[in-house]
Length: 181
Image (cartoon, rainbow, N blue to C red; front, side):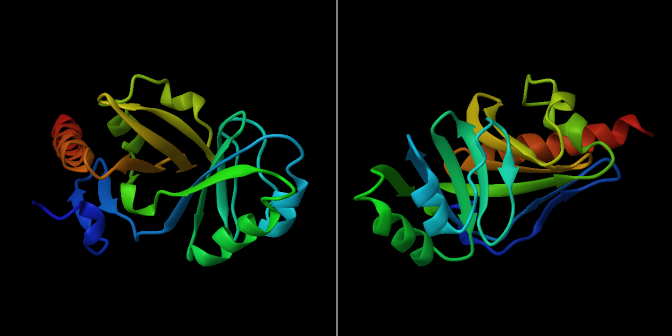
């Protein structure tokens, strides 16, 4: 069996004048589901959870609202998040699942990064503002697409889909670069 892409160190996976695709450092990643008064969770985590779908917050914990009661949390360590949430479970029942091993992150940047994303994503990329994130499909695979800047994206994908999506991104980067010659 092949090792998942997340088992390898960060590296440049494709680079052309159009766009660069690289793997990101693995981070602790949690799926959080909760309803009701989120104040106990927010106080325990030390972060105000965004309420609008697509909205993100950055800090020691990076959070993106993916649904009316769903967030993805990114951090450098798992234990503080797990302990904080466990401490308020009696007050605010919730679901916290460590999904760190499930996903890999591709960083896509460059002058045609948005165009490269469109080879696998039918969304109007221009409607995804910098500083937001969306759950969407990329060539049929469910992904979380973060837009960090006009020309910089992160694409979180399940490890099992990563080789296929990477191959598609590599081909797309070469095709976009060839178009400009």
